[in-house]
Length: 147
Image (cartoon, rainbow, N blue to C red; front, side, top):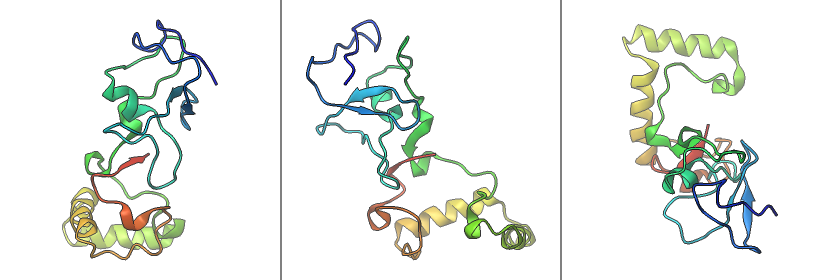
């Protein structure tokens, strides 16, 4: 376990034997706390991410210690999609092209379709059984997830 100095992370000094998590993205350390208003682990993959924690502490950089941006770990509802993710349709480019053409033919954008999907997702009108997420049934659009 690393002991962070007061100068490294926004004036915060870790307890000498405090428990820490290592961020999956930047490999920086953060306190492992259970009494926080922000989650430390992604509900989709269970990996720890420090962006939401350090943002909640008003820390934007850690000097010599890595600190992720808040954008790396935030609620689904705060994310935008301007294009279809490459993992759509199990990475089948042909099916992705057909879907893109259908969206365009309906006079809609991917962003518009995603906004509708968020609403259907929250109302549990979308089958989550095939979603590659660890806690698919517990996830809502207010759930923090990694990029």
